[in-house]
Length: 88
Image (cartoon, rainbow, N blue to C red):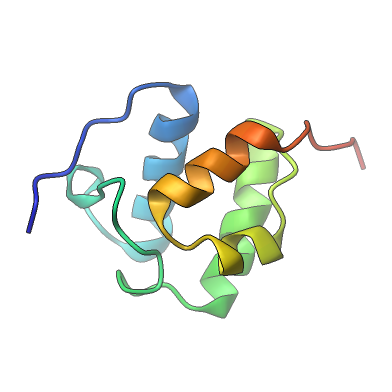
């Protein structure tokens, strides 16, 4: 296994912490090439991840974004391209 790359900005740092919390993994074990589902994620945890991203980062990352972009690098790219989440 390739050593994980350290987060480079606030979005990456927050994503790593959210993945870590949801998957029960050490944050240092999560790398940019990792797949959420390969690390133990499932549809309910993906739904929770999208909710937490909206809450923690105020970004409109939806459930479908997580399903379609399960690799960390791909989800990070989506998070950098979506607009801010609208207030409920």
